[in-house]
Image (cartoon, rainbow, N blue to C red; front, side):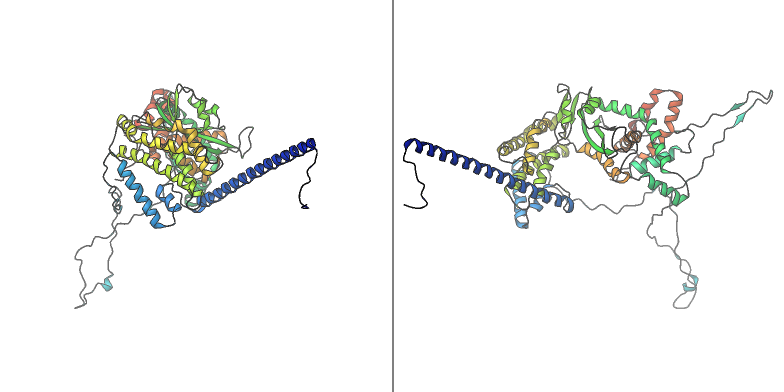
Length: 543
């Protein structure tokens, strides 16, 4: 008998027990093997996900920031011939599906060399030859002036000028009885009993909120260039006071925004150091809302320490219409009978672009992502056609139903095929989950030609805060954060509506004290950007 053979019991009952034990043992081993298999599978997915994150972080740190299809395809295909073939295939496919003939894209002509505007003062500088060298080479006679040669124009810079306005109040008295002594009233000022004029406040506010100059840098600039002592704390207090001064204008703009039927919404973080009951490192938020109503472009910045559904209810409880957002769940708290949420295709595209950036080389995952990216590009192609042809909202809606709807159906089919096939922890899985969760909102744009494909218009208004935050970094108090939002609101509304911000801010700082002194509330309406285009300088067109 083989020494390795198992000795079986001779008794039938014992044999049954033995067989049962072996079955249990085999089942246990199979279960353990399956458990080990699942653990190995999970570890492989985790390693794969970590590799994706490493590649994505490297790309974010060292690679191009562009999410355009050509840039992503260049990352995906190392072989130039393969990339060229794929681009040609996509162009052929797009041409076969297109139903509207659009002139081929022409390379833009280089912009001509800029000329110095005619309104800039000209001062002539003559270049002459010294008399000692002004001799004829043939007979030595002194050369006489014969004419002039037009030379180049140079732009000269003169540093900004400051001067002091000394206010003197005159007194008046009756020449007969030498009584009835009357003194002229104190000159109106945006900040009473301060040395700040409207022009100085305008310069400080635009320097900080357009050109992102921190107040400590302005303090240094005032001293080093002009020996003017103007501390950062003084300027900060001025900004808080003018933030309160312009609050009525901000309120009117907010009311106008809430009357529109379509707004964009987003939020970004802000650090406020001295906030009651909160650590200095705790994030607070600025909520940004944008709309366009009858040619008027409006943006509102609102400070709140929270990022929650309660804030959304506070801001938009009475609003009725479309809200374009990035998928943040706080907006789901709004009454669905009053509000329709619109999804952002730019965010969906970003999730898919991260798959290309996070997976090195060609892969099944990148192939799936590229398929969806090409289809999304076709959606934007339809919008470009409508823009080029100048379609009205109703015409745009009809075009979308005819061209965009079939593309949406293809994306839906692609999404359904990957729902159960992509691990939700991977980059592709996250993209698929985002598209699935946001699908109803992403397709709302088909209902109304006024709706956009993405929320980029609002995110463009978030950019000034992000750029400024990198320089001035934080707000000291909630009062400063509220003032920042109010000043951002006024300045960016001026820019959106074609006004030079510094001229506009100086104008309203001159007019607001007059309105407060007179008590005429209707005067605030006249100070809105679209109502004072004839009072301030406009941003000239570069075309």
